[in-house]
Image (cartoon, rainbow, N blue to C red; front, side, top):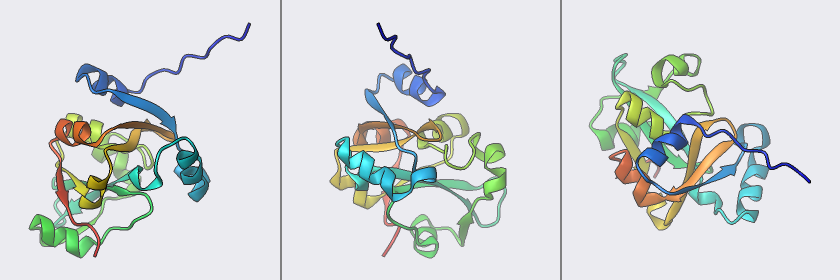
Length: 166
């Protein structure tokens, strides 16, 4: 008889459990598979537009002023527009090589859950995701995602909606 393999929960899944936020676990390896990961997600019943990437931005060149923007994988971010939306002089991508020191995650693992709970960085969501009742974000490990109610996540991280692309 085959033995069922128990997958160890990530710290971010434990945070969701502590806050009694229901979620489903999924495997979407965007970094290795690219667009084919979106095809797999859609086959599993998760709309591609509801799978979010987490972008860490540094504001005004200040080493202590970071913001996090979550948007669908298939879209891009207009840094000038987001800076204007947030009342910042300028925004640029945080240094990927230093992400572990900034957020506690390496590139591909960043998630609004842990970044907000542990670091207190403000979290912003692309206003287009309001079209989805459920969204998927990283579970804090490359290739692992959690699929949960959009409102549960936004409320947990005290997120706000902004326009991120024209």
